[in-house]
Amino acid sequence: MSFVPPVKVKVCCIASPDEARLAVSFGVTAVGMVDETPSGEGRIPVETIAEIVQAVPRRTGTFVLTATTDVDRLEELYRATGVNTVQLWDPLQPGEYERLRNKAPGIFIAQSVHVMEDEALDTAREIARHVDALVLDSGDSEPPFRWQNPAGQTHDWELSRRISDAIHLPILLAGGLTQDNVGQAIRVVRPYGVDVCSGVRKDGQLDQGLLVAFLEAVNGPQTRS
Image (cartoon, rainbow, N blue to C red; front, side, top):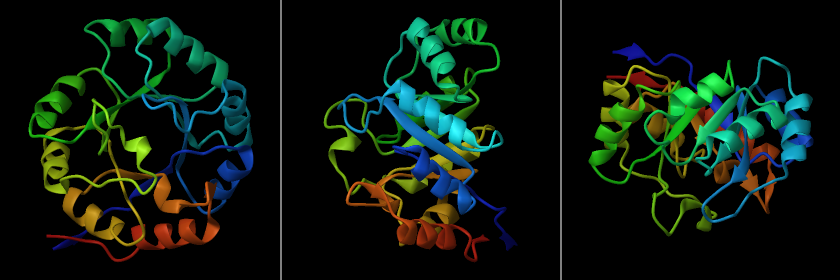
């Protein structure tokens, strides 16, 4: 039995510079902002995303989550916001990942994988050849989308564990994580990091108490069998 290495924490759905500064002040590694989602929920203006990026230290991971698959739009979003990472909701078409890298040198690409059925493993293997990280989420590629449930939804962590074991990329685990279940999720999946949104928000705002409790749960004793 050995100890699990420290797990990184990304807080998504950041809506303002103040929320970003709060998250980073407690040791959060990365912040995520929403540009475009299939449901349209959580989106903030490109100008606000740029302000958030300027508000955090350069070492902070800055993610913009988007449902667009248009490479020209993705390049524009990357340059206009100043983020270091574009997180894609849907996979790009063959050849489009390379075209995006050619248009935006230095871009870091994270791909959401919707862990709903066993084929998610094959999907992850295929996408992993083109991206820098995977975000294993509970969202479905078809309606209804995860954003319609403010409480978030978990998924089959055993399937995410199989993906994590098979893919040699940083894996972020997302989907319905809270202070009550993140410890178990880490033990099962053994991810590089966890990605939380609704689990640290109250009345639409990032809540310091929930954030601290979540971070304490992440940093609590975690063991690997």
